Image (cartoon, protein in one colour):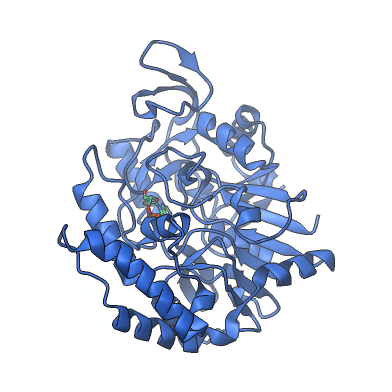
Length: 423
Ligand code: IMP
């Protein structure tokens, strides 16, 4: 199958960056299809740690072409900065050659960031806990048909008309609520400057990808965030504003729907950053130990991640929604010394019923039922063959397979490129 899509199974931060880096070695194209610089994909390279927010992880491989698809929202100022910092690390980024940007990708403005912070500050009934990067407001403007697209940055007259439309719409309510209004000239000037830097990369990426697909090229689709942050299928309203699950892979790239291999990435335990329901969350010393052992701090915002047990109810749901045919299990090494290892197998709902399905409402009131397994207290970070893992670690992996119905052939046991157990 020439196309593979890598998706996070829960709320993001599953270690997709490492898996994509690993799979990118075999890919001709690596494509981001959704989200923006709210994402943070961490790679551990021989030269040290690298966190990418917008540029696809294939950029570190000399032979891959990297695409920011139309489903991504792009902050052009951030993108210029990220490209510069990659170049500063000695990574060749050549717009038009190894980095292509969809002319249809929508643009994040400073005004969107201000709006994001404002919306959080006035929201009754609890903040979403967004990354504050303007993601939601940029997607909202796309739906309201007042958004700007990267291709607009290449034509001053068109850009000015577009900025005027946004300013009319936003300033009408920005000023009354105390938000700084958009200054059309300043916005146009800033976007034109970014457009001039990015010009060589802004193309019809959908056409490029369709031709590549027809030629049998290997395309790797890099999901951002995770299935439970998907706007449609996630834990709404505590989600991001894009189609983070596999559905976004078609609408966000312009590739026609076809059969693809979907690889779900799941951590050996669960984490979440931001607000929202999390049935297996550990608000205790065990949760703090997991956070410390897994160094669970957001790679974009630095916020401490909430930690909890592996949830087979949620993973089975996301596996079905995403069409994943297998799981890659990450961070197994982190579970060293935790006992028992607990797997959520069902929820008890407020009305007393038991379910093995993920409910659309009241997930915050679902109480998980667990299956407990013995732990292992051995360093597994140097293990490379499944049969060399301690028996209790193997049992844990096999229990996840049994309860989710998804095979696990690849297990990550550390951040390094080679810290992988294959079966
Ligand atoms: P937004 O995407 O900034 O609007 O944030 C919406 C929700 O998605 C918040 O709970 C964020 O913490 C979460 N989120 C967004 N991007 C990521 C990510 O890359 N990893 C984990 N959580 C994320």
